[in-house]
Length: 102
View 1 (spheres, one colour):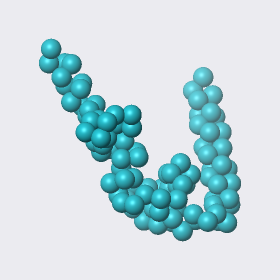
View 2 (tube, helix red, strand yellow):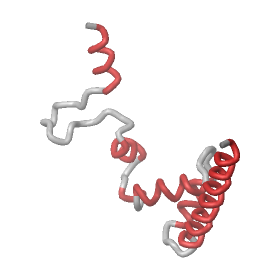
View 3 (cartoon, rainbow, N blue to C red):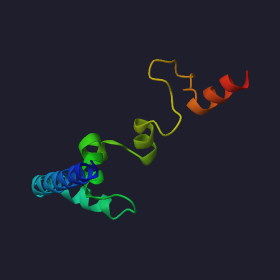
View 4 (cartoon, helix red, strand yellow):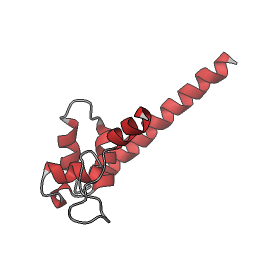
């Protein structure tokens, strides 16, 4: 039984390596390859993470500021998309804390 688990890990590791090489080949000709390389200079951002971020976010220049990017990602409080100009989105942390206090 243990040998089956070890074999499964070996197969999964080989698959990850094969897929990573395939992604590296595709990224080499991609217009965002320099951005992927730049992201890898940041601590904790490895190749696959950088590719995933840029594949999901696209061209980062569409965000006028870091605050806009963080708002897009939902990491800062902002206006609700359907609310009025004076309505602010509620912080999920505050909503959870308020519910727990009752």
